[in-house]
Length: 379
View (cartoon, rainbow, N blue to C red):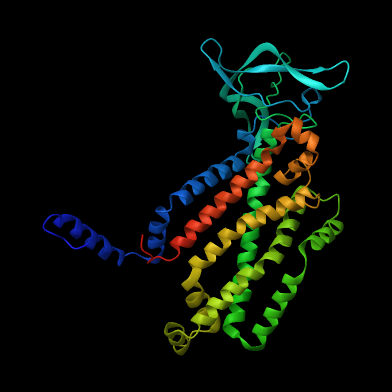
């Protein structure tokens, strides 16, 4: 807009704003454009909260996710309540058995248990190093035996384990496996794809045929074979790394083809030719001059691949081929396979909500980064 007699200041401000964009670096322009994507910003904030909760799982969880309480099997969620006389509290429940149908159900005892923040509970080691007994939220009093009172914020499962604590602890693996898989995928995809596009010829043909062979394998039989090969006595940590490597070896091909296509279009550009004429080696030209030219596109591709990794891990665990209980969200969904269980205990479907929210947040962040990757796009 040019300045006019009616509004001379607005035109000058817009002209100066547009001229200032020329002084921005590529990453400054990307951050500026990403800030306009409100939904991506909200999703990034939610992902930050999820990862903070996963990192501080011992502190955020209300109890031990693997502790079995037979007196609280399928306990319904104990929602917090507030009153002027009692303050923040919840109603204590007791399990009853119908004498005719033998069906078990819970009734309110009439007594209340006060709730608080930074309360004393089960002892744990924060980050595996710091011994501590404080929890973010839970009952602010101990039981008659001096032990923490079981509190089922989101209900209990078939063994009386706390669903909320299992969700928090399960987020560690479910959220981190996508990121670690992406690191391996990034290394394989960029190196192999860059070599394929830069060298060309027979090397390019061999790599592309290898990619086609890998893409032709059906994933489910590979997962079944993986489950048969992995020893049953492996620790969750070993199984975690094995699944990470498996998912990475199946997912790098897409990124490799994207990188190959970009390198093919950039390797004859003037700056690449000038670098070779000045004596730069092939490795320096490829990794120092060509790959940084479309780093933003690689980041976008990787960010959109994280949800696929999370869903793949969830599928593996749901089918019983991945990690074992009570580690990840997919394992928790095994308990919801029975329609009668879902109808009577719907809180067991909460992992579905967590998975959907996480995948949608990653997709929105990926969309925002994809829009921001074109730094000179108009906003």
